[in-house]
Image (tube, rainbow, N blue to C red; front, side, top):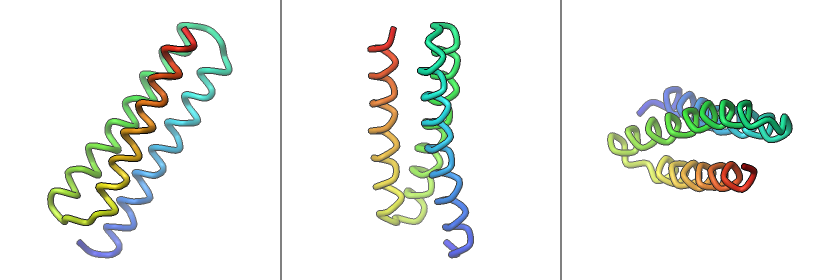
Length: 88
């Protein structure tokens, strides 16, 4: 994998995690169930797509940093899901 492609992958996946976190935080601040569920679905889609992209690239290139970021994304997804359930 070229360094330019690797940097782009890292930037996009970390950006997806950050945007998903902000989207979910905005949903929690709104305190309306419909908005919370909507923002949760958007945040979950971003997190899942980021994890899938990282995992597919890990299978091709066997770079351990990609696997580590997959695990971080999975943990963040579990935390967001737990916060969603607790706030309902």
